[in-house]
Length: 389
Image (tube, rainbow, N blue to C red; front, side):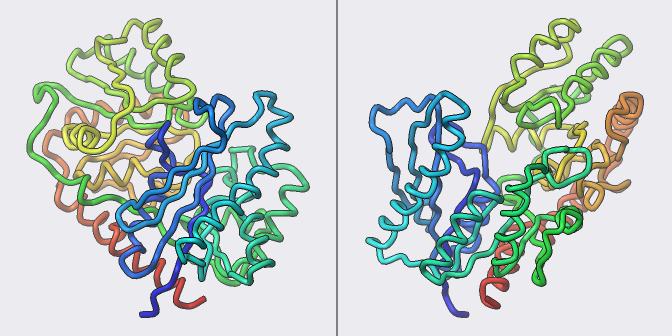
């Protein structure tokens, strides 16, 4: 197989201030690094950048992936920063390309993760250096009910960027269909799911929770408009009035974390049958998955939803709303699907799980994830796309 040089340009990527965003992009970069030379160039703009020096540049090797992260300040004024960021984005990508060139890394293919601005950068690179680009898309803004796909100029730019690309790589068929509904046409759509770290997320017989309780888990970015955490809390309040053995742990951080903590206190369930852990990653996070009786997802909309796969990889069933492409993975053998915003259905689903001790086959649940979403399987799919360009 012809070894290629692949440059990732991600909208989100783990960085020194937050290790969680864009983890799926990092997994993909590492997966294709076995058969390609891979570099990641990530520009992180922040209104509260703590370094006195701007830009501040990090360069390091991450499991065979050359990684350059350029941190820089932008104005706290949202209107100034909006236009300032566009110019700085191009400027710092040019700087990053120069740093890679000094390391004898000139890409054969640019791989963009998330439109639109990075697609414009990739289009500029194509026009100037004749380097083709592909686009991976994961964002839920294309889906019905999100109401986040707007702006005439932005829509026109997206169509141009998509048309000029060598391939479009949505994370699911649902996302592909949604993009086509927005007239983002291309002759080479390739479905490639996000990678699940099946080495980290595995079945374990050891539990860090009380085995005499029904241990529920929710992992998210704590953005209530999409994740509907407040709805989960209301259901937990109702359950607390009837049973004292059902416990929910909420893992993560985000814009609505404090508000959800306050809401749990208002409902008088905080640190009683509902516990907030904050951000967890790596082995501690895996142990929480492995110790749970069920994962609870009550989202109003989703695209791929990585926590579904991480839970299933640990052999843990999932209670989830039927949104995004979750129904492609969750069924009667590994969980329960419910309607978005239907708190009665969530209440009944939790009671069903509570009465189904040892009902699900953990090994069978995990096997479906290993066969379709492991690093080896997804890496092979991406390599095939690169080789055909």
